[in-house]
Image (cartoon, rainbow, N blue to C red; front, side, top):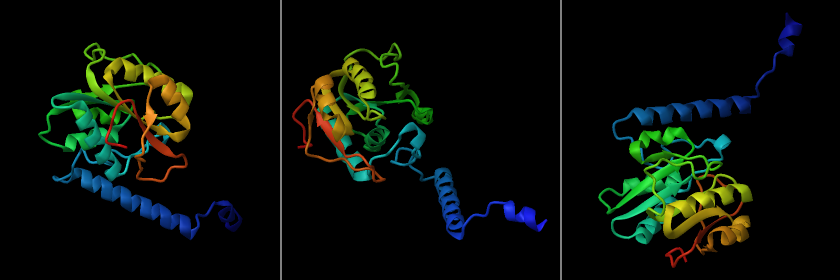
Amino acid sequence: MGDDDDDIPQLSSHTLAALQEFYIEQQQREGMKTSEDFNHYSVGSVEEDWQLSQFWYSDETASCLANEAVLAAGKGGRIACVSAPSVYQKLKEQHGKDFSVCILEYDKRFSVYGEEFIFYDYSNPLNLPKNVLPHSFDIVIADPPYLSEECLSKTAETIKYLTKGKVLLCTGAIMEEHAARLLGVKMCKFIPKHTRNLANEFRCYVNYDSGLD
């Protein structure tokens, strides 16, 4: 019996403490979601899924990009957030502002946002509902989930279909050349931040005169 017990893997005290901390945080998050004052539009209300390459912006970055989108769209403008849920959530927190917004996302957890949610798979860039008309958005803000030419190229097809002209792209600095070729965008001075530190340097790109410079 003693020999058998020796074969059972034992977790270190450090690992056990980390697991306990994780479970406590999970319980706290679940408790927040059931509270009456929980904001379903706050950044982080839907947790990141790293398997889907999801990394949320910091609150400050999400606010900055949302404000830029509103200014670029203009009064009564339409904004499309392609794989950029943090910005969509910040836009929805701005109650009473004169604009409309849609979220295009692969993650169906965002379907909680009702009719503004549009299921989107970048591998089928033009597979969109019939009511999503071409060139019907004043600005498109997009954050392709993967730093690859293939992902950016297909996402660019979606962007060009949706936008009347203005594009705000967030992606890695290493994608600068591809972004310029595919969308005619230039890198901004503003540097977006995420809630977690990423290994790759992220930047913003636009094809119009923006406040991000």
